[in-house]
Image (tube, rainbow, N blue to C red; front, side, top):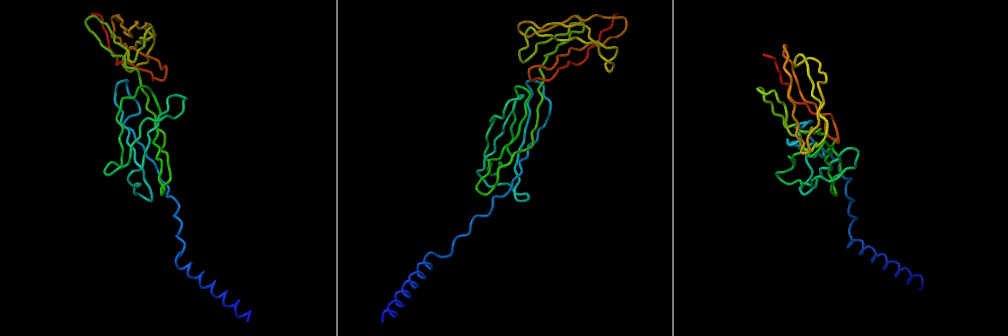
Length: 224
């Protein structure tokens, strides 16, 4: 009798367990691994004179050629000199704006990259680094009748040296004619000589403080 009662208990427990499993149902499958992405960033120029615009365009590809879903963020990051990366701008990929464009005037030479932060289904990625070299603006003016070459440097360049170069022709090798200093408000000027043979002159500003070197267009003088 005891064996029969035990058998009934076991059968009852098995029936209850089977019912519980039926209610719970099969285990849900785990999410698939996040898809790899590729971030892209292009530029319309590698060199700009101070005050000029530069345009950067970014996009992200995933799963072959499609773009990640709406609402995903991309961050444009900037690095100046040997410093670290800092946030320059954040954009959200939306329809139809899945190719964010940044048009701005760079304040100094810098490197840029675009970082895609990823989603639950897509992995983060970083674009190749782009560099924009910014040159100081010499603000050049030339008065042919007085032979005065001058201008105002931007950004500020007070009390700094500018080299005046000369050459026998606009494509010949250049040598130093003289060195002058800018004024307290970054202005500069020089009266050029006139020789019996036409001579070409230009102003040169060496690279400094994160800015590339700058040159004016050649001007020429001739005695006569």
